[in-house]
Length: 410
Image 1 (cartoon, rainbow, N blue to C red):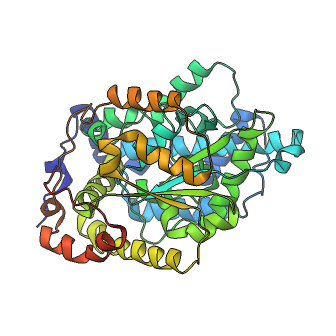
Image 2: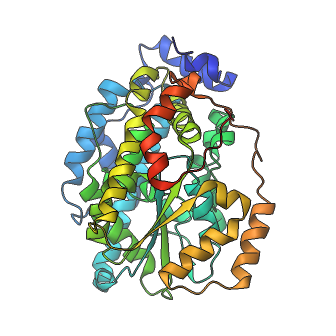
């Protein structure tokens, strides 16, 4: 029997008290509404705009079905509903602003996203730190968290935009202080593509936040939206190479190459005895922020199967099914010497890598030590796995990529 989240990470008193308010009125839905029609009208009223655009298909149908699944399956708390309502309303406004921008500047759609560098891999395999180190290159650009939520900012005051973004970044650790040991959220840090994709109402981010078995993301619509989003940010700016990231690209690499045929994929690797329980812990922590119920057994069922996908990808790479535009970076190598793996990847991509970038990387790592916010402790047994089971089920992946085993539970 797995230990429930209430025992793993007890809530701060202020969160617990707010959520208990629902008991006095018959449910959290009576305190915070997620009525789609009302939210759509409110977004239009706030902005004075009416057109949500159609550059990514049936956004309204996706929003309706997503909210219906959230209402019937996700069991959101008062805090969870507040977060979700804010995100939906913000995303609706983003669509309105983007549509106006496209109408005013139709040349935006002529922009070309050239040879983006895309970081992906198993969750918790070092994708985030690699992403941050790549973003230190002045010849590239990434999506900052404040930018992901404000692709068409209504003010030029970046400090104001960063403050507004705090509710979707640092606030996560306020709700659940232990989350800061899992993943650092900050308005100025580069953020995953699935965050920027949220206004498509097709992004995997919605699934991560909400336990909705009947609803799944629409990857085509999400990438259609994301392409337009990137073009808006790139328009009339000095051309720099995009550095993008999300582990969610891993199962849809064919689609990624369809949208970005000249993309470079940096594929991260780490010992599954580390990534598997850490990934489960992270997903459970995100769900626990928004709901009083986290189905841990369903969450962990088949968790090791994703490593079979990695083996399949290796087989396809070896037979030439993918372009020779994928480079492997191993987490333990990056820990030992953070510069060498990136230098090697740059060489394969034909990009210059100078000493100044190397110095920035080393300085960044020195000032962001592991465990900065405490230790994220996890073990396979905590999530219903045995060490032997993980080793057996992921053996093919480890051998296919030559992954160095780390051992230990931390």
